[in-house]
Image (cartoon, rainbow, N blue to C red; front, side, top):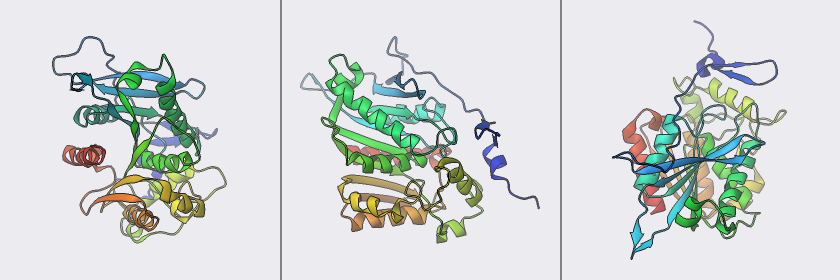
Amino acid sequence: MSKFDPYEHLKIIKNQDGTLTRLMEFPQIPATGDGDLLPDQTVVSKDVTLDATKNTWLRIFRPAKIPSNDNKIARLPIIIYFHAGGWINFQASDVLNHETMNKLSDQIPAIAVAVNYRLAPETRLPGQYDDALDALNWVKNQSTDPIGDPWIKQFGDFSRVYLYGTSCGANIVLHTAIRMIDYNISPLSIAGIILSQPLIGGKKRTKSELKLAADPLFPLPVIDLLWELALPVGTDRDHRFCNPLGDVQVKMKMDKLGRCLVIGFGGDPLIDRQQDLVQMMVMQGVAVEARFDDVGFHGIEMVDPRRASAILGFIKEFVV
C-alpha cells in the first residue's frame, strides 16, 4: 500500500522558495456589473480593489431590485464573507463562491461583500486577519465618505453588519471579531458572526479527529499540512491562530462577541473542537446558536445543494 501524500491529495507542489504550484484550476466567473439585466437575473455584482499593494479585492453583491418600505428604500444587512479553501485555495470569483453569494444576496436579501484575501503559504497568518480588518475598515469608510461606494452607502444598513465565514473563513471571522473588540468601528455595528464548520485545531488529537483520521476528503495528514503552510514559521498547533480554545486572552475577550451562529456536521474530523468552541462561548456568556447535524462532512455544501440550501436557511433565520 502506497504512503498517503497530502500534497498529492491537495494537488499542490511546494516550490523551493516556499510558494505553491497549484495544479487544480477552479472555474471563474466575472462580476455582472449593473448594466442590462438578463431576464431571470435577480442579483448584480461588481469587483472593488481593497489594497492594490497586497492584491486584495472585494466582490460586492446586491439584489437587482432593492425592496422598498413605504416608498422608501429598505436598507439591507451587510454580510462580509470569507471563503473556504484551507488557507491555500479559492477566490471570491470562483463559480461556487460567486453562486453562494448570489443566492445569499437574493434570498435574505442582503448586500454581500466577499473578501478575496491573500492565500498561504505565500502569505502566512496573521496576514489573512489583516486583510479582514482592511475589508471591515473599507466598509466603515464607505459610510462616512461623501463619495463612498453607492451600493454600500445607499443600500447598506451599517447597524446590521454580519461577519460570515466557512472553514478557514470561519477561523478568520472568529479572530477578526476578537480583534475588533479593541477597535472603534463606529458607525458600523456588528450584529452577529456566523461560523460555518470553523477550521480550528490543536496539538492534542480529539476523539473525532482520531475516529475520522482517514476521512476521504479531509484526512488528518491534510489538515496537518494546511496548518503547516498557514501558521507563522516556528509556531505549533497550539498557537492561538490554530487553537483559540487554549488561549487565555481569547477566552477573556469572548464574552464581548455578541450574537454568534455556529454550524457543523458529525462527519467532520473537527466536530469535537467546534462543539468545544460552542461550549466555551456558552460558558463565557455569548449568545450562541448551534446548528449541528450528525450526518454530513466538512464542506458538504460544496457537493450537496440541499445542504447548501439548509445552511442558507440557518443564516437567513439568524440575520432576519
